[in-house]
Length: 242
Image (cartoon, rainbow, N blue to C red; front, side, top):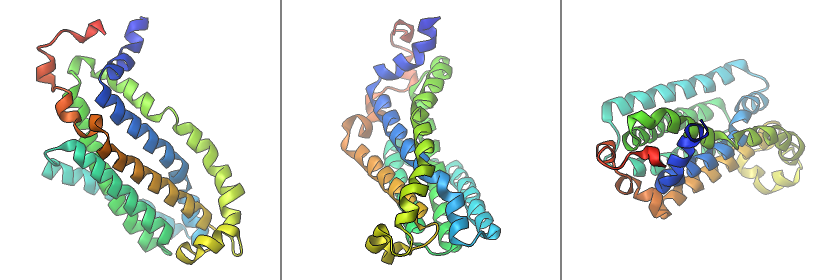
């Protein structure tokens, strides 16, 4: 029973490129778990609790996700899926971060979420296709469960620190006359909600840098050639020996 329960973890650990890719996702999931929960209070704080503005931004995020799925269904993605993941993630975080930090109204934020969620949906589709092609079907249940756990295991820490970080540090510092406001206020504005917007910008910037770092890691950049597809794995020694 112990070997069955740990099979997925051992499988991923034995295929280092998949482990490196998963580590990249765990890092980006963590930084975004610090920033993205602040989206709703940020919009409300910067629009004087305008529910219509919040509905516009949330609807834009949903529309972007649907568009990403439709585009992937029509296009199928780039030939080298891993490069699409790295570049798409970087552009996703760049679009979200810049529009959230520099935008001053819901139209800007909604536009950023349409683009960001569209790219995010496409990137997730590319990632899922890589895992399904590289992991034999008979192992996918255990491997994917382990993958999901490892990708999100540190995200709750981000959720725990997100609120206190905004309330105790960034929001007071970005108030009119605050020390952060004197440094970046000319770009982001000042007042309620701008501290949360700055946190989201920093989270997106870290996510973008993490994604770009993947280009410098050969194990990630060449994953599709380093890990054989399912048809090649089927001809090799059974993985149950792991």
